[in-house]
Image 1 (cartoon, rainbow, N blue to C red):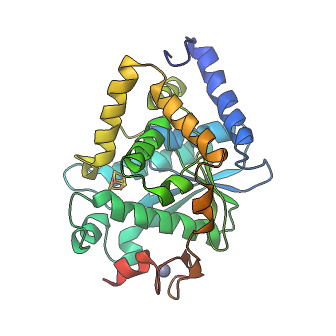
Image 2 (cartoon, rainbow, N blue to C red):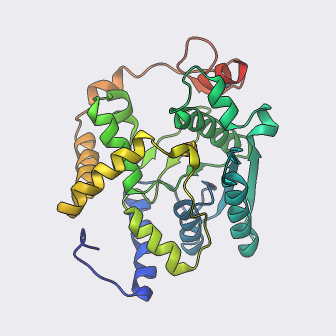
Length: 291
Ligand code: SF4
Ligand code: ZN
């Protein structure tokens, strides 16, 4: 790990990752051992590794798999669901499964095509649906906290994109913890300081079976483009990604965006689904479903 100037053998690496995760959970005050955690699992290496780590650390964590119905060309959703279910069954863990097609009559590809945003922005519709469903399940089943497997590469790419356009509201909200609000579960990202390569190594060394394919709708997305840019910088300057992210968190903690905090929009419950929204009437998820 050039960024840490450190090399570990398999045995020590598999000890190091949970120790570091526990350190981040404590440092950012993500949750306590008494709290009920819902882990959003996609069948990929990051979320399954996160679930594995939380089990190893002794936390009470159930899983949530959201079937997006992305099965054109490769059977991406079917295969990733299989991975998530296998993982849960082998370890005797509880997994909630939500099927978007069954719940809302349409799967992600059709919802995306129908939205005015059109193709090429698939991830924004998908993200909206996933956030809504994660929050719905967390709320309905009384989970205290929702954990996602975002790694440093994901976080640095989001930060990079938001910084390029100085998206103040988004910068304010980005971080390892997003506090709970009435109707909204607390969201945490315990892997946010691990490089993607580190999580890949963890999954492989732990023998976790996960889906290797990327989501076919992610091809050409801006997040992949930003990740490639950041990888080029990282390659020339090891640790650049980590510094970029950590220094941002420090700057935010030191009040760089404090003025923005006061002008955050007021939230009210959506008259249809009851989830908090800043929109004038119904929330953006319900608007999309209606359309
Ligand atoms: Fe959804 Fe985009 Fe992720 Fe595919 S890459 S699962 S479309 S958010
Ligand atoms: Zn709504």
